[in-house]
Length: 182
Image (cartoon, rainbow, N blue to C red; front, side):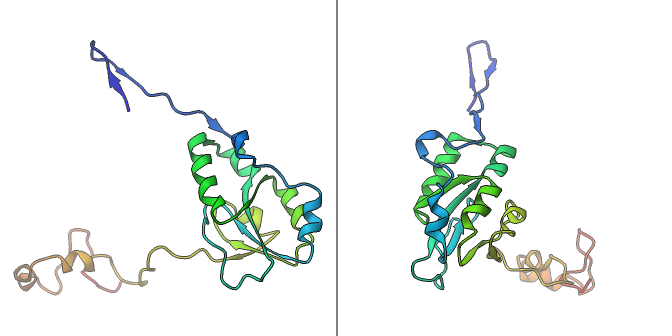
């Protein structure tokens, strides 16, 4: 938040520094060489910052849940310390094991796993699709029916008297007929 001094000038609040790697005290790092052996023959579920949700119910017993921060992504789009901390706290709730790793290291660490799954996301698709089966991300909003305009909600909000004066062929301000096929 900016503040004004007595002369009326505004002092800007400095932007927080951006980090391409997690703060050291979070303890996030690449897995050690023994990790590939530990994962051999087991199922792995990958959690990432855009899918901070519990693993699916159909995950096998003994599956390993791994939180990922891909180095390539964070070098291209660094985060402030507060974001690293907030995301890591949320990720730790669903993935006790978390890695800061590059795509090549991830492929090596997961090479022996029986099955690797996760949730798809445009931020990471190209890097994860080579190592994991990606489930479709859940939709947040219902998909609009193709071929219909978006004036239905607007028209429902009008009063009954207003609707009674409207012609069924009246064109809205946007140039489309209410709920008409396009």
